[in-house]
Image 1 (cartoon, rainbow, N blue to C red):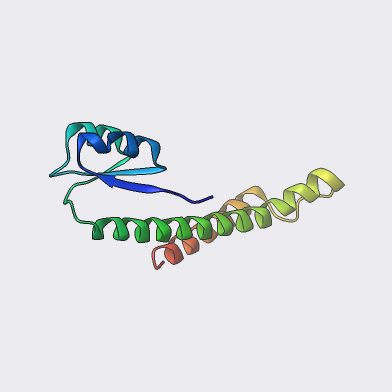
Image 2 (cartoon, helix red, strand yellow; image 1 turned 60 degrees about the vertical axis):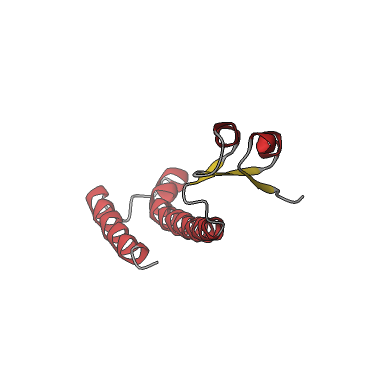
Length: 117
């Protein structure tokens, strides 16, 4: 399945802008009908903005995937002692306060690494 993007600026482009997966209208030269039908409006009427937007969107999506993967991995590791406690009825190997400090430390490390992405 292909994703279709359409750019337009006139009233006659409105049906195509609505039908497309991504409708992009020109902000300066575009008609109000085209702007209302479009999903995105280019404020500077520059086609290079589309490429920049796609690149930034892909970067954000990639960083989100990394963040979610890290968070899930970290949280699963932190949940293991509690799961063992619940399933096997074994005593907790570490206390609640200790777990909170571990969580605080790992969150600070991840936020430092995330700021360098």
